[in-house]
Image (cartoon, rainbow, N blue to C red; front, side, top):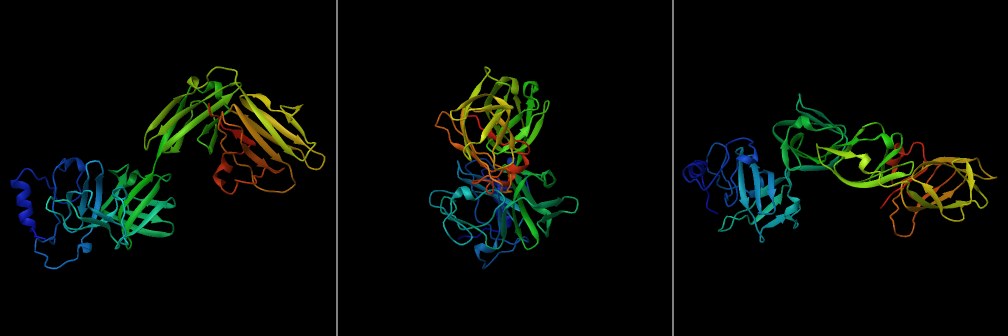
Length: 397
């Protein structure tokens, strides 16, 4: 491939306005060229001298943006501190660190790559993840020290220098914006951090007009249950959620999206719907002959029982075992609860979603101490949400 000296490349950037090459050091992406521009494989040392022989894998670049729609990739070159923009296309080979074919979508900001040569149109022929760097993903156990330029991952300490970049939502952010609730992907060499990417950020859910549902429960998705307090706010991982509320015959659902660093406001008064609402709950209890009490009254559970939306006290009395008591929170049109009373001491139950109007599914299988036969080990995080009630029947209107 024809080699272009650094001085020659800079002359082109200044003298011919169709190319827009960034200045030295890190620079925001909005100062780079827009569409149609392409740059060629840099092959010079920082002092401008020609490089006679050098493997392409020896020159490292960090991806700072990847526009998969327009097939444009922006990279930061560690050799000369400059940013470049390249086209790629259908015949570009994207390779993982082992040389296997990968997809363009996997080449996200923060990953460190090497660049191959370009074709006659200036499009990259190949682009690969560097095997000279390490990559850690899904990091939740970490500590940041922006003042000292340090990041501690588990028990190992790494340095975060001036040439490291932090990304969130594919945008560059400050290192000190990272919070303890984030999930990170980190790239580095030895003990030096090259990039940090916030892969799972958090946003805020802000509730308004909570009076009707105060001291009831808010269900967020399938796993999160929190007691509602006046005009409460809740920090949540970014993503799509279905909210459900119910109290004293009122209730409803709402689909929301939590965005990283943003506040999503929800008016519970608009979720109450028309009331009173009732859910049909079928109980299956073992051992046979057990007596079921709902709100302090014995009931016949051989057929589905209609219960008003909201909280209900639930207890099972048998001759063989101690009385079994929990709080039942109803916010779905129909569900089945299986209760298996034993004397084993095991953890608290978990909750699974029941969709309507499909036939009811089993949501619980619990023993006398509140154990679950099928899913307690799979959902340990639920324990902190299910502190004082048996189960929640998820609403799918």
